[in-house]
Every structure is written in C-alpha cells, then in structure tokens.
Picture 1 (tube, rainbow, N blue to C red):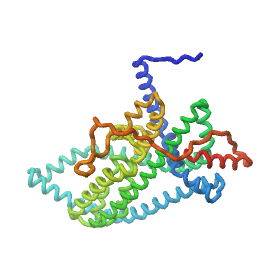
Picture 2: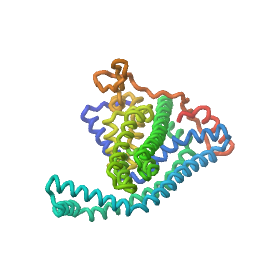
Picture 3: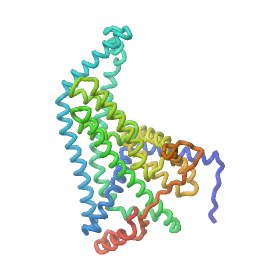
Picture 4: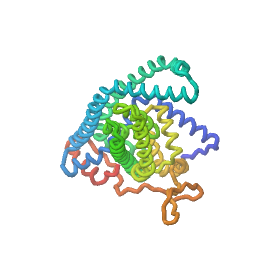
Length: 409
C-alpha cells in the first residue's frame, strides 16, 4: 500500500529552492537549445488555426497544411526583413549628416555648461576622456559579443521554422505522450490544462501582434506630424522593439532621437520625438495592453518585472520575450493543481481595475478590496487521447478525430 510522505515546512522549502535552482541552472546552460524550441512552441500555437483551416476548409493533407502554414510564416518574416533592410540602407547614407548635427548639439551643450557651470571646454574634454578611457576595450568586447549573438540569432532563425514544422506535424504524437505520463483518472484535468494553455498563449501572441501593429501606426503618424525623415522605418522598429517589455521602448526612443538628426539639427524635432514616444507609451500601457494583451493573461506587474529580469539574465533578449508566456503557462498549471493554487494566486492580478466616481470610471489600486476570481474560459473541446499511427490507412481517421475532438490544444 502506497503511503504519502509528509515533510515539515523547512524540508518542503528546501526542496522547492533546490528545484528552482536546478531548473534555472538547466535553462542557463541549455539556453541555446531550449530557447529556439520554446519559441517554436509559441509559433506552432499561433499557426495551428491556419493548419486547421487548410485541413478542414481546403481539404489539404496534414503534412501539406503544416508545410504551407510554416512557409507563409517564413515569407512574412522575410518580407519584413527585406523592407527593413532597404530602409536601413537609405538611413545609412545620411550618416555624415547625423554626425554633423550631433556635433552641433554637442557644441551647444558645451557652451551651455561653460556659461552656467563655468566649465571650460578643456575641462569638459578631460572629464569625457576620463569617463571613456576604458570604453574602447569594453567596446571591443561588446562588438565581439554582438557578433557571436548575431551568429546565434541566424542559427536560431534557421532552426525555429524547422522546429515549428515538426511540432505541428507531430502534435498528436506529443499529446499521446503527455497522456501516457498520467493516470487515466487525471486525463480530464490534463485536457483542461492543455486547452487553457493554448487559449492563453494564443490570445497573448495575437494580442502582441495587434499591439505591435497599432504602436507602429501611431508612432509613424506621430513622427510624420513632427517632421521626422524616416518615420515609417522608426515606427516599425519602435513597434518591434516594444515587444521587449519595459526596455525595448527605451532603445527605440534613443534610436529615434538619433535618427531625427538626419533631417535637421533643430532641437524642436528631438523634443517632438520624445513627446510622441511618451504619448504612444501612455496609450499603449493604459489602453492597448489592458484591452488586448492582458485580456486572457492576468499577471501582476511585480511578478512580470521579476520574470523579465530573470529571463534576461538567463537568455538575454530572447529570455525577456519568453518570460511572460512561460509565467502564463505556469499560472494556468498552478491554478488547476490544488497544492499549487497559492502560487497561482501570487502570480495573478486580483486587484479591481476601476471604480466609479461621479459616473466616471477611474483606475483603482486598492488591495483591501478583492475582485472576482479571473478564470480563463474557452469554448474549445478538450482533446481526446487515442492511439494513432503514421500509416496512410489510419491518417484520415486520426485527422478526423483530431478535427472533431482536439481543436482546443
């Protein structure tokens, strides 16, 4: 007869800490392998509705439907890359003009410091030389690291479409593998977890895509009104960098300020760029993210920031991008396992979003008033775990069963 072992609190805490250390260490040493695989899982979830459409509406074979979906995704990414390449090549032709305008602003700053703080040009140059004394050596290290990262990125860009294709191709195989890991009485809970993970991740990724498009459009329009020369390029780059939470927009703003010097050394353009960036971020953070991105994934800001920092420390920019989807998956799992529900509650955002003041709804941040529990609901039917083979005579049966019963994962 099996006996359940009960450990004291300090033993449980020790085991939890050791598990966390082991998981983080494994992710750190295996990031070159795990990051492309995790990115591929996200893209596979995003492309799965397209695969289902090709199979159910156009009657494509499973392999052909997966192949066409991945090919369309690759062509879309290549088209965006080609567009940015042409825009960046035109931008590079104005490098001399940017350098001259930077010198003008630098001389104006030196003159301001000399008049108001009584620092001569020689003293300012001395301070700058002292501050940048080690910058050359550090710069060489940064360039070397950047080249290595660029090489790794190219390798990942090659592997991700392949992984995505294989994940979509062997989707049923992976589901059956998961079903074999658990007892039959736990299959219902497993189906529920997988269904909700798919809904949460799919809505999160689609929300990010919509947010990226809207941020790009708002930035392009704002830069055009201000008079920035490469408004379309900078708007698209701002939308893409905005995918990196909290930090991406900072780099986008700096790049936009530098690029604004291609048109004129006038300081008003720089002020306009800063104003447009701030306004777009206010709209994004207070309207777009709550309405679009966070509609299915309720994670509080504290856990989000900690997760992004940890993800960045483990796997750089890719880790920062993957942090929130991973936290969302963990929250879905924790919320549906009795012993882990406290951790799911800790990760969630249970504060009321608004309160009414004179018929006006305003943001409310009062932890003493709890809101209703947020549950991710889905109309998808949970998957049916049945044996399947890759033989041609059973493929149609497997596809029919998958279409009828496993659209939710």
